Image 1 (cartoon, rainbow, N blue to C red):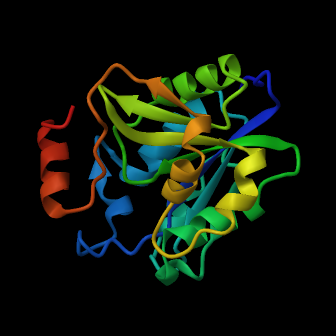
Image 2 (cartoon, rainbow, N blue to C red):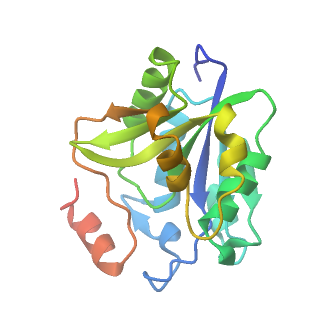
Length: 204
């Protein structure tokens, strides 16, 4: 893993939902011989990130074991998952080492996310030190990954409910650098139809 010019960059993979719309634990669903979650983790391991935290729902059987991959820095059990994504964001931030200067948030249900997109975020972060947020943009569509510098961590700790960092991005819009990925938007896998399209290769 390569050190960024602005200190340590870690990832927090948000993987603590209940898969309500899927009707079964979506992060354990297979894709190309691996679970959706494992795809997300392995792409992080291929990237220039210096550390990886995976926040999982302890009520989903076998999810912790699926996150247990060599190279993962910490696996955090979110026993407040029912209160929404904000709880995973906050428990992830609390688990970061003090040396971490920036964090990239990733979703466990985006198996088509690759190390290339993660590295582009890190590269643009290093080249644009005046910005506190680096957000991916896919042919004009804003998406993940999103990087936040440490000065915004206190603001992320104030979010509530089932939101990630959207309100913080909106509040500090003047500090956002949009990192163009030069590809179509990467879909979440939320519903059986999303998973069907993934397996048919229609989302590539």
